[in-house]
Amino acid sequence: MILDLTMSKLSGKEPFFAMRQVNPALRAILCSGHAVDGTVQGLTEAGVLGFVQKPYRRATLACTVADARRKASPATGGGGGGG
Image (cartoon, rainbow, N blue to C red):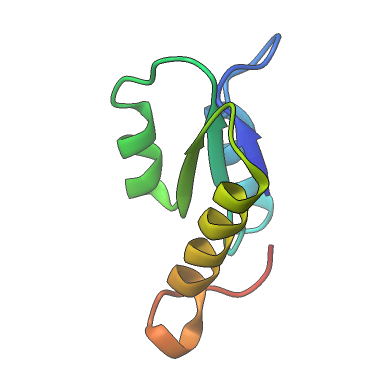
């Protein structure tokens, strides 16, 4: 899942934690077009697998997704299942 940190009524934090309650194995990447304080680090510690700054190119997003998949791969010990 790709979550934007800045949405009209929520930040990416609320949906991430709500979806994690439904599926603890959820794999997520954050994106934002705004300056980000410690939010990304806090969510990374909570299980978010990557971050991409907007605007981004497809290649940048593809690399971020590939990195997140590697982090989540059971073969590398990154945890992982659904999502």
